[in-house]
Structures are given as C-alpha cells and as structure tokens.
Image 1 (tube, rainbow, N blue to C red):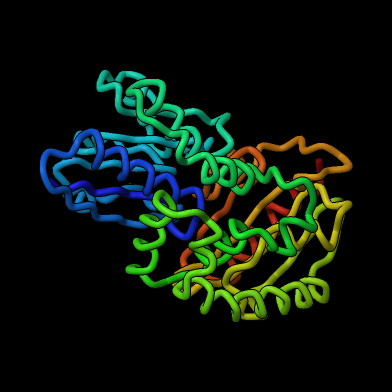
Image 2: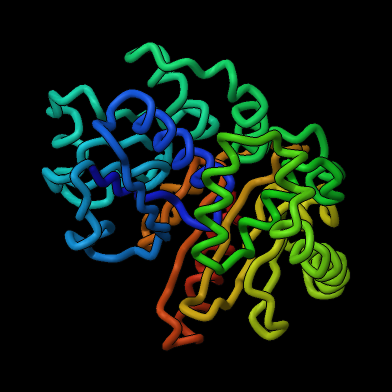
Length: 320
C-alpha cells in the first residue's frame, strides 16, 4: 500500500506535518506493509498548484500546501490564507463529505493543527509529539519572544529550521521527516547528517547578518533588501527585524537556481501594528502565505519584471 505525501518543502512546519501524517497512516490506516513517498512542493503561482501526475499513491495526502479538486487527493490539511488558488477550490472543499480534509487559516502551524485534528476526530495519540508541536508553533507562527532568539539560533529546533531551509538532498529531507516524529530534536540536531552541513550554514548566517547590515535600508516603515546581486538564495527572515526594530514590514529579493523570490513579511515585534494582509497582497502576483508573512515566486527570465513587482509591493506597504 503506497502513501504519497505532498508537503511544503524546505520548511520545518511542512516537514513535521508530513512526518505526523505518515505516522498516523502507518499506525491507523495501513493494511500490511506501507510504502511512504514524500514530494516537496513550492508556492510558484502555477496554473495548477498540484500536477495530476503527483497523485500516484493508493492514498494521497497534501499537508501545509494548497488545495486541489482532484478526486485522487484523499487527505488535506492546511492553514495558509492562500490555500484556495483556483476558482471553485473553496466551494469544492466546503462541499467535501469525506471528513478527511481540514483547513484553519487561524492556526499558527499546520503541524499542531494536523495533530489536533487527528486527535479530536480519530483519537490519534499526540502527547508523545509535544516537543515537536511546541516548536512548530513558535517557528511557523513567529512566536519568538525576541528577534535575538530568532537570529542567534541557539536552540536545537532553530538549528533544524535553518538546516531544512537550506537542504537540497531529497534522501536527507526524507530522513529528517521521519526523524522529527521519532527522535528528540536535540538528538537530531547533533546527528552528523545535520550537524556537519549546519556548521558552514551557521558561518554563512553570520556573513548574511553582515551583508544585511550593509545593504538593507528602512524607508517609510519598510525594510528593503535586494540580495540578488549578493548571490544569497535563502536567509533567516528575522535578521531584518534584528537590524531594523522600527520596521513594520520587510521586502526581500532573492535569486534561487529556479526562480526569483520576493519574500514579504511583517515585524513580529511591531512598534506600529500591521494593517495589511500579506497573503492577500502576494496572491495578486501569484504568490501566497499568511496574513503576516508570504512570498511571490517569479520565473527566472526577467529580472526587471521581478524588481518591478518588488517595487510595487514596497510602495503599497509604504503607503500604509
């Protein structure tokens, strides 16, 4: 029996959600030996967020990612405000009678939402995952007590967050997913497959702080950082608030191997509260996210267009 799990890739919350559902499937639903296949997903603004060919399991589940009306999607859990991308998606979800699709845009993390849903609806025991649920809420809900904690990365969970955001090896991503629901976080963070590649990542993190200190600027309450010329593809999104505590919003431009990415966020420790819905803003450009944080992905073909979108987003936030 094959389970296909689609999950938000390079994401602590997405990985934890995938591991929890796979654990539930093996313990409660699998008949005999279970094969579990994981597929990472990214918010790219595609016309069809989930390609039909990806739903190839006997059971298909999607966690921490957008909805699909495909009848082969059997289970779904999400908390993104931008979950329903295509016309008819939300109506299709509301009409679903399977009892296996769950959505709450107010949930801080998909991990805890998924776990709580399985516990309340199906009696799945989740007490053993208390540490994982605790940190998933803090990380995905940006519930850090300060920017210092989010940037200094002393806690094992925050080091795991850094590792998964940068990992590009599929086998290690899958090992990590399985470990999250089987081992203490401190033990995983100390394991060689995480600890060894993490050291240069932490060194780069310190370098990124220095780069951001040099190039990031605050304009009208918006911290603007163009990292494309610096060759930085991923960055800790809290550095900008660590350096600019007066910022209400942040717009950061990055270039990965596949795309241009515009990361848009609001300060979790604001001196002036957020008034804009970031997910709604990003959706206008094919992106998505949450009310407080989101992203826009654009084809890596037209840098001028990507910079234009970033300028438009910045101007909109600055006018608040």
